[in-house]
Length: 100
Image (cartoon, rainbow, N blue to C red):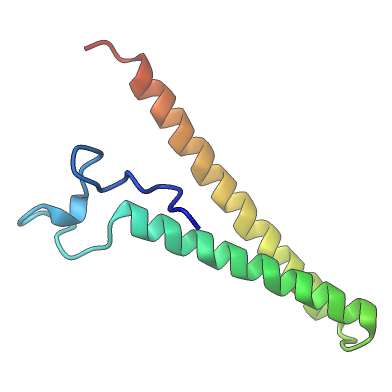
């Protein structure tokens, strides 16, 4: 799979705060790495919820509460990811409107 945010942190692109010497984020992970890790976690939660629903339908699982909990976790994670995406797009649009 291609890196959806491959330009973040690359030379000539958005600077990585973790690369600053002596800064507060000198040892922290970059935005790109955090974003990709969260995308993976949301994907795993979605897959777990799908698996739980399929297991319930096939009779391999009988705890409806666990299935509901898995789907709610996946839904909440996806909504949070959407909110982050919306804020990033909003910030990008704002920067795009700035005059140099």
